[in-house]
Amino acid sequence: MSLPKPIMRGLLAKRLRFHLPIACIMALLAGATFKFTVAEPRKQAYADFYKKYDSMKDFNAMREAGVFESVRPSGEFYICIPALILDLDY
Amino acid sequence: PNEIQDARPLPCLSCASSVYDKGNTGTRTQRGAKGKESAFWGVHFVHVGLLVVLQSFSQTMLRLTAGRLLLSGRTVAALSANSARMASHGDAVSEQNMMSLPMYCDRLDIPLPDKPYQDVLSAADKSLKQKEKGPWNNLSKEEKIALYRIMFKETYAEMKRPSSEWKTVFGGIFFFVGLTGLVVFWQRIYVYPPSPRTFEEEWQAKQVKRMLDMQVNPVEGFSAKWDYEKGQWK
Image 1 (cartoon, rainbow over the protein chains, first blue to last red):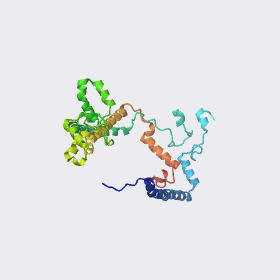
Image 2: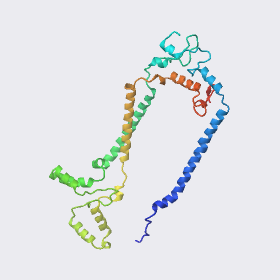
Image 3: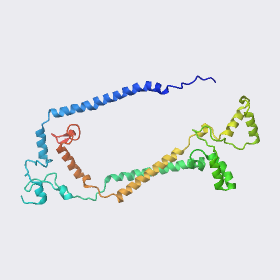
């Protein structure tokens, strides 16, 4: 039985020489994929949204819906909140 | 505390009541409806578990000795060789002696156990051991196998033979998971407090409307999916 002597040294180096470039390429690929599938569309979506954004129109829509506490809908009276809680008459 | 949270700057004169008025103090006894699923799965799992466990038990118990299920590693040989002496000598003393001396074990990761399997050799075995000291080419195939069996109890092939233990394991898992499901179901009925009123359908609807009014995440998220002109989801 005379088998050839197996490789005893440099096993890690050999593996790294093969796998490290692949790892780097995969990392770059992952970054690029994320950038072009998530980041760029998101930036575009925000740009498109604000191109035609009218803040006063949206503000008035929200005001009429009644979400604000400082500005009530145009049909309501403005009442001082502490007066309400303390039940004062002014 | 509830009064202050619910107090809103309501108008003192006529104004249609806003949708954000203090919500109705509806029934607070409504229990979570989500716990009922656990009962279904609980019964199902217990049923499956019992079936598998009973099946596997009937198979494993008939084939294997009881010791295999109780011991880890394969120190069966040493202990069964011990049991004969234990009967005559009394339990505690020889058990201690055997445990402190090198023991034999059949393990995949220990190829050469601490001592040979057969300690006491018959006369034929002893002569075979003498023959082993010479050149091995003189040994026949049967003699080599006999020498192996003196040294070891099981071959690697025998050690690696498949068993039905996995059925017991999965059966036990299903059974106890199912039992837990039943326990959770019981808890849902008898232990859980009443659900918070924020879980009610009406409250949830009001909450969604308020989120849309505030335009939560209008660019890519929640309100972006609502069509404000048509008043419906996109």
